[in-house]
Image 1 (cartoon, rainbow, N blue to C red):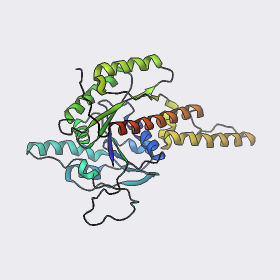
Image 2: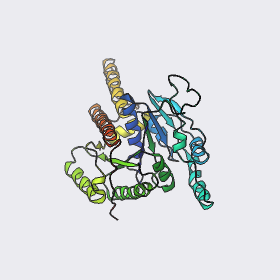
Image 3: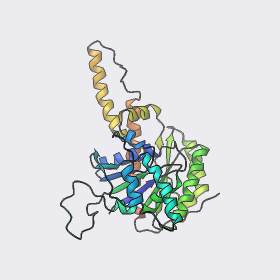
Image 4: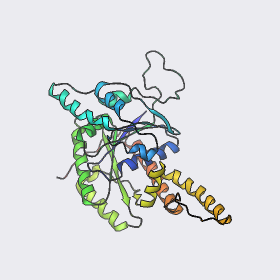
Length: 318
């Protein structure tokens, strides 16, 4: 059974796309078949996952006209992507124009129902559902400042994850997306707020993490569980990963190879560091990879616990 997870915040710069890429990679490395859908016109996911950027034209037409989704296969083992891009800016005006005529867009859900992994065991027989070989998890990255695209994603999603940093602007963005979530429940009552992820937290900031959790509790109440694992702040690792199109667990492997290369250069009397040397430390990269591994386990456990359970009520303080 496929589970569609939207990752959203009402503010940019909170780690939404980085979290989507890192979580997708960790889930795929753990054995899940993962599809990532990039509904952001900026298409920054391509840089994080290291695949050629597209224009988002196919996804735009899938949402507005019901065309089948074209999938970039094998971005990682068990990880495929539907690319975003600037053509997605066409979706909001199309939504508004159709609404003025009393019509609706096909949306994202019908397109997802037609997507299946390329390596299906056998061709579907006549009459079989088109998604017979479902992905285990579909992660959908959303744009922060475009409410119509977010709402269309929420209409197709089973779960919502909200990443946030600790600053006031990021928490304000959390409230904005929580309000959109509450409105989306009127259209998609099965949409469940899976939890909030604290992103970009400096290691050892226990008191600050506690204050953020208290603020989230005050804003969203019991309906917004905060995942126990937070993603630590490591600027050097972020630069290393994005410049190379690597995920956290892949950066740790590159560090191991880099260590061997530096030792070899030293033995040959050459400088250990070059212009291509990694900026981050091995221990830092390992810690970041461990954060994502723990978070992936928590996300899977939360989806399993919420499956078929009662949907939490959301009260947003405004």
